[in-house]
Length: 426
Ligand SMILES: Cc1ncc(COP(=O)(O)O)c(C=O)c1O
Image (tube, rainbow, N blue to C red):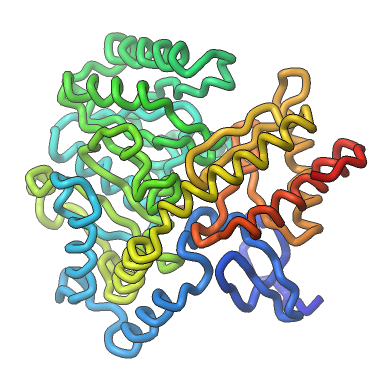
């Protein structure tokens, strides 16, 4: 295997593999020896248009040849303006003002600053198992695993954690779980953070790093109504669930609700670092000028990549393909679930699907990681997630087709058979 020494890369990064790809195309990565890997991680939910989509590559090349930065406090690049106009078209009508930054954590920090500045209230409510990033503010909002927080206390105050409607964890149906979690949310408002001091709730419509758990529609609607009742801003963290991933451009659309603030990143730039806070102009106008910003946000190159990404999403109906292929993938996974008892739960929306591994009703992280490893040996890259590390997440590029999903399912079936010590192959 042709590899280059990694001695001078910081050891703080965890690595799923030691693969050193030199090329990416669609759902595939290739190393220097031409070995092909099926990338069903999408670079953690980033390459929704596939690796190196020609339209995105052309846009980047053209923009790079003309203007790379165009610092937004100094000048305003046409591609940043074009991106804001395009986002205005594809987001709900009242979301008509957009702030750009570089990462999901940065956009989350921005959204919380905006909510605090606009409401003059200090606190935010997040949900158990959420992942919002690794900066100080977002660490304080992240409860998916202690690894993201341990050793960094004290973290910023004013963050309160409500239970997430994780039906499989509670062992209840969606309605019972929703009712319990809404009751706990109201209890939090009575006992820990009063509405008049609560600026916003921040929720992932599908819990990502916390285990790929879609929030039931009933829960999102009633939570949204409670926010309205108490003038608390509803912030949707669509960093992972956005840009077509769940079968709609944004996941909150499934519930028919409209957030006050949308946090976007990952799939927005097809791999170029760009994130965004979207809100109404009225709300954004309450954010004191100059109190937030950054050197690179709204730079011309990343904005051009994002414009091209949204065009591809629309022209190729990638949300539609995510819905169609997601249904096919879930059917295949459910077939495997009927053969392998270790697959406790198969759930998701579109192409954001989680397989939770359990044995005797308990999380089985070792089975999830053994299956992940056996898939990797067969050149299928899959990530795990979940507080207990026992969920395999299916998050392929949204350009994936049925034959490619079938190939991945076949590998997954083989891996399950090997790990379970069975000879059955799906
Ligand atoms: C839902 C969600 N929010 C925020 C983030 C943080 O994004 P970033 O890693 O770009 O800072 C992530 C990253 O995985 C995420 O999944």
